[in-house]
Image 1 (tube, rainbow, N blue to C red):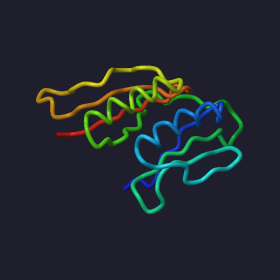
Image 2 (cartoon, rainbow, N blue to C red):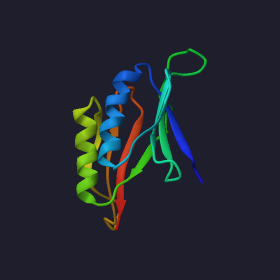
Image 3 (cartoon, helix red, strand yellow):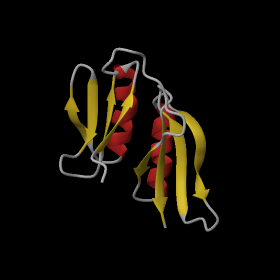
Image 4 (cartoon, one colour):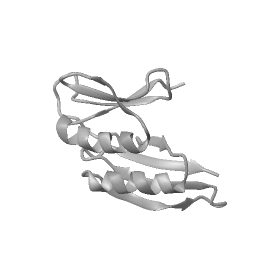
Length: 124
């Protein structure tokens, strides 16, 4: 089971605005905050997400093929998460809509201001 995921950033303040907006839509907030990192989630709840400047002091970079999926409660929340991402410096990687052969997977894909890829999804 995954406890949390961290993503790198080169601008923590800019990234914080992006993730604050997504966390608010998901009904959670900041769980921990340090000078070089912020984590969002609910202690004892589902997996959290952290944003941090790399420990080694090198620039953050995006992993090819890496994506973090945020589970939404319904189609409307997927739509709102995608809109919040774009309104807070994110870029679209695929608008909200059904995916797959049977349409039982509804998702939207986007990147944060540092280029990390995320999606918001709901099944059923």
